[in-house]
Amino acid sequence: MTTPQLIEQIRLKKSFLCIGLDVDLTKIPAHLLETEDPIFEFNKAIIDATHDLCVSYKPNTAFYEAYGLKGWQSLERTINYINEKYPEIFTIADAKRGDIGNTSTMYAKAFLEDLNFDSVTVAPYMGKDSVEPFLAFENKHTIMLALTSNEGAFDFQTLETNGKELYKTVLETSKNWKNSQNLMYVVGATKAEYFTEIRKIVPNSFLLVPGVGAQGGSLAEVCKYGMSENVGLLINSSRGIIYVSKGTDFAEKAREEALKLQVEMNEILSKK
Image (cartoon, rainbow, N blue to C red):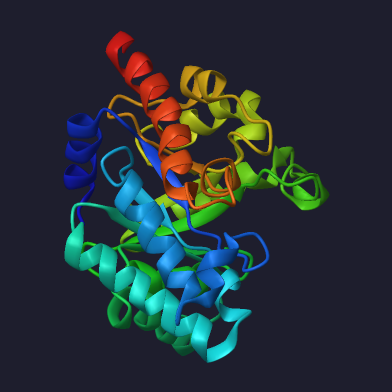
């Protein structure tokens, strides 16, 4: 999917919501555990109930890898289902990969070619040659960790090196990499006060923003400081949507929570 196509979906749906499909078998409705593939059945129900309210789905691959081969097969079934039934949806493999040379190329092929995700998250700690292999794929996007929402983000990301915070150096340096136009960035919603500085460096790039909802981030604050001319935001909510109910009405309840965010996003877009 190209960036203009993603922007068009945001305009059509009046939403920039990304739903995280982080499936924990201990948290899903008990009746699904009786099915052959409970992870996929859970995802399918959530997707069917919310696809018109969001522009993106983001499976965190750890929640699939933890269940071995069966989990990976559930991930494959999930992405195939989205691509076949809702091809307008932007898909994110939240894998946080990052290694040098041929290894990164193989990671990229796994997610962007074999599984056919639109994008994959990567960690930039190893530098240019760990990220550029992901950027080489046409009409695919690499979403690089920039300033995350976890408590440990302050261990390294905000430390000053040569008078500049490290996350700013990461952002500025990445703009010079080959095919950097395919870059997006992860910026946590709990760091809303940093968005102004981030937008000075990457004014038009899309930002994937976790932390709204369960982690306490404010949608209004993120949009106030982080929205670009073409919106430029994908606001992710996972637990706050998919685990609202453990009953047979779980998909319906998930839709209700997704709708609340979509309505709020529509109001923000109408004032833009």
